[in-house]
Image 1 (cartoon, rainbow, N blue to C red):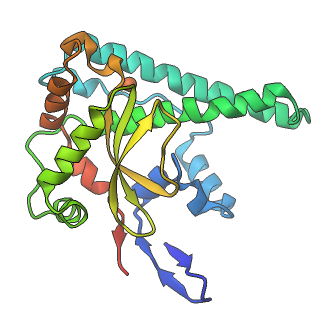
Image 2 (image 1 turned 45 degrees about the horizontal axis):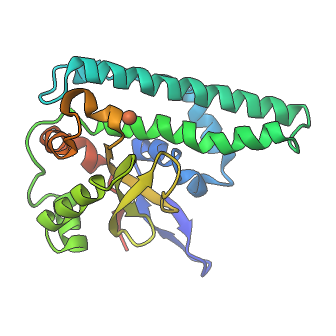
Length: 245
Ligand SMILES: [Fe+2]
């Protein structure tokens, strides 16, 4: 992908494969494709996804440390976010067509969009970064990057778990700052507050109570240990943005 660095010189900034591009068109990456509606429309048409589709994560059932009941409840909850995201998008488009953008209805639907959309997309990242076996590949790209950003892999893991242990409901997210390439653990309050502008979500951990209470009660730490035993590091590594310069 080419980005204008501001000095008139086009410089290759990221290597993006198609999958990563689609990811970037998610939570915050729209900024990257602003002004390129032809590209986004072409992708949407190719994918046949003018509305968001529920993804199937049944492959996770049987995962050690996560009961079927907990997972099925969680899938149902996720499906509600997909439904509501589509409803909101439809409602907002309708109000736009009717010239009713200056109404309280439009404003409230627009405010709600961040909650429902992120509720959908964060769950997708979360389920997709589960189902793996074995730890992070030592010496791999992500391992190296985490070591550079935190001093050691262990320091990163400690900080990530500390973030996930914070009182409250939300998400612990390892973000990559797309401009500097730096890795930072963020606390995302509920779904829609605290995302860094231009951040690429690399690893997502749900710490809403519904993610663990059925199996672990208040023992969030035990849940986080189970989460770590099941991280799909191969999938996580695919999310990395490879900076050339
Ligand atoms: Fe959740």
